[in-house]
Length: 78
Image 1 (cartoon, rainbow, N blue to C red):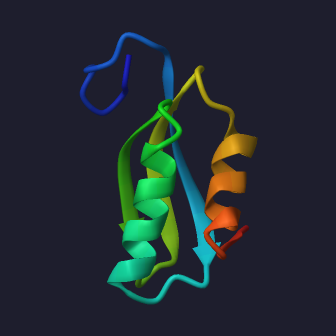
Image 2: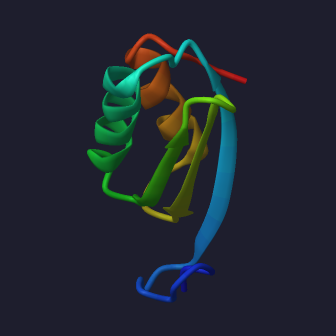
């Protein structure tokens, strides 16, 4: 279950990744939308000031898929 709220049936991990290149609301929305489209990512939070993206990740989606989705939007993970 999700460690934050227990709302999902799959085992989930809470992940926080440093992401560079995000600077505005459009960047925030682009990352949120890209991750939401993956299906295995929930509770997405983008912090522009700190350059961090946090989310719950279940076993339907890999961390590599998440990183690829962010990088396809033009941002750098890590």
